[in-house]
Length: 581
Image 1 (cartoon, rainbow, N blue to C red):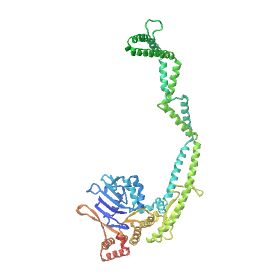
Image 2 (cartoon, rainbow, N blue to C red):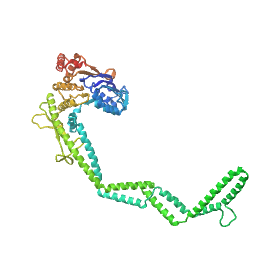
Image 3 (spheres, rainbow, N blue to C red):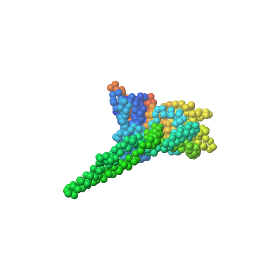
């Protein structure tokens, strides 16, 4: 329930605090005094889009605060929203929603003092408050809204959600079918291209890092003569010239040095370490000489092998230029091509599986949508009876109201009783409210036959029926009485007051007959003092204050007008204990 609304620096409101109570609260005042501005202010506090035009000329930042106290069922519905923002520990049985609006249109939002997104205020507001604006009854003239009203009335939103889920799955399956059924020639051309690419890669069959090994081999083969010469020169330097030259090699000289050091070490033990080092060096040089001899035997001048290596490298480089920067990328491309080719070659199998899935989903959808439609048919009759009862109370007893539910056949529709019916996320039904205001005339769509006053009364009747199942704690009606005369105003007031048994109701009205039914009455005044217009709100707590306001609303300020106002209050009287809460 909305307990308090604080408004600062919004249009003609400088600083205003309103305290509301349970039951039926009514707001009255002259045209332009700012009654509807109070509803707009609450909408802003609940996250609605801010208009910088509403900022007072002498102020920089409007501020709005709405304090709510809620019961456990409402707390349970708010729980998921609060958990998402990690606010569940900060909120007990009350909520303080705050919104500050800057002149540039930006705003900041807080829940119990904690900064949040404006979108969270909107989500919370949808659970706490249902606002019906001055022109909301025009939505009745749009048939697209009628199915939502009926489903909410009959509590069918869960069944409709199951239908919507099946529709989404079916749409995804049909999208996949569309891809599988694309032009056969294009698929074959793509398959041929993939086969050529795979064959080209498999013909070369490159191995990981093969190009690096081939480049090394190519370098050896291309420089074989130089490598052989350098190896022979190094071996000659170590082992000496085998041609009989007198210059000994390094190995022979090292061995001589080792023998001399051996003799020295026998005489002077201090040279034993030197002798050991010379012996080790001689062995290493001997091993190196053997390695050079083996290398010289391996180096060969093989132009044919060099040509083969260079040809292989060119083939690998050609693949890299086409399919990737490395052999690994080329091999990955081949794997992807094989997978695509497999999908294309098995297209018929996938197509059949997808068609089977489509048929299964269509059958499931047909059953679910038919069950939903049957429930709507039953609920439509019930809603029509209850609305006509309400309309009779609103002096429209001769009006016939019907809920028309029809279906359209479609070749691509879901099967229902040997028919193929068009469907969407809401099911198979095209639903529309029909009425006839005059006896003997056929029912027609509301847009064709409903006048402004009739549409307003029909909206009130529907809201009175639907609100019984509505879990929203606070219902706000901004001049729902448009087009309703004084003779019906009292009935409309009783309807709104009866809603106050299960909801907190706030209504902005010009009708004295309607206002007389309220549990609490607030009057909005506009004061142009000091060249700056300011709006104020006063709760009319005693009967005389209410009598004066009702008489002013009736346009009869004299004794007779006051007497009429008293009679209105007496006719609308209810137990005083309610007003004292």
